[in-house]
Image 1 (cartoon, rainbow, N blue to C red):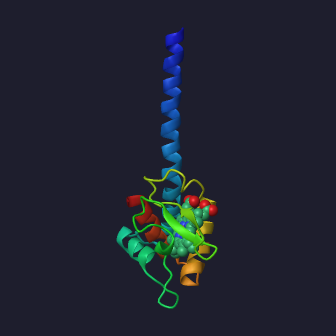
Image 2 (cartoon, helix red, strand yellow):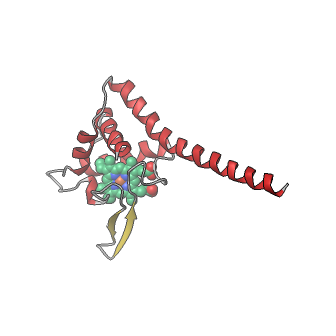
Image 3 (tube, helix red, strand yellow):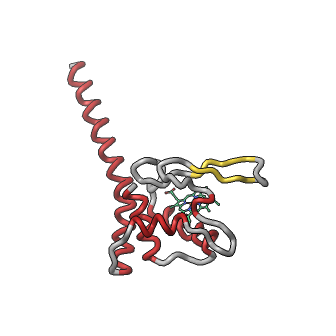
Length: 137
Ligand code: HEC
């Protein structure tokens, strides 16, 4: 009886892990499909990387001003005139299981930070390239 119980626990754990991986992959995947439908284009991780690292010439601000250039690692954002640092999440879908859990949140943050960095909303094509970059790295 005890043996069956352990097997069952292991089985449940494996199911849970597989299911979780599926959720993270599917938020990014759902977004890609949405942007693909909107633009009729396929996206480029390379262009996404370029966009992520490019500075706004007017302000010198880029996504990598806070996020790490190595998207598998967390970045830092200085607050209160550099007195404190807060951790900025790594955006690689495979490296950070805490991001890409909610489609709504990702869309909100993309709009929020595009506005901050680019002083405009990003186009669906730019967002598609970004997600492709976060998925492929
Ligand atoms: C001023 C610092 C800063 C800049 C600049 C910045 N980000 Fe972020 N970003 C953050 C922080 C902090 C979070 C975490 C927010 C939270 O979870 O409440 C975040 C979260 C995100 C998320 C959500 C991840 C998730 O699923 O939880 C995405 C996507 C994102 N940023 C993309 C970008 C992109 C693209 C740019 C450039 C256009 C950018 N960020 C620029 C600080 C920044």
